[in-house]
Amino acid sequence: ADMITQSMKDLDHPNVKLHIMQAKHKWSNIVPNPNEPNDPRNWDFIKRIIRIVLLYGQTTTNYRDPDQETYFYSYSGYIIDVVGRWIDGIFRISDAWVR
Image (cartoon, rainbow, N blue to C red; front, top):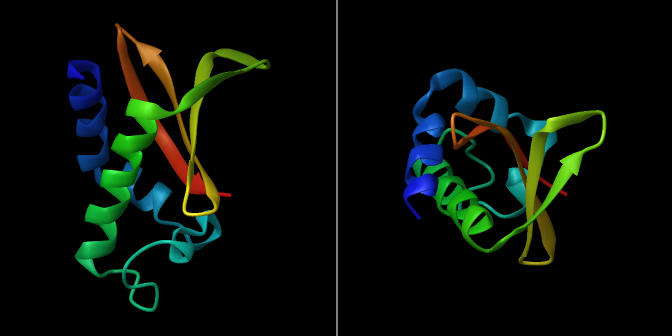
């Protein structure tokens, strides 16, 4: 769980948030207020979902980039992907989306 706490800190970085919040990532399918993307409740919800994915999800490695890993977890009829890479023993989140 300590690793997850460290990983979650990456979500405080504005560029990471912007990357994750892109419309193409389809968070509007599951967030509390899909018509208002900037509603802070949406970001809080997304962070909670990402934490669940890291805690309970399965992982797959990118065959083209073995340092990159994707955690994935089924939620509300969708699969949530959280992508990152291991750096100094910490999973560094770079992106996440709904599929």
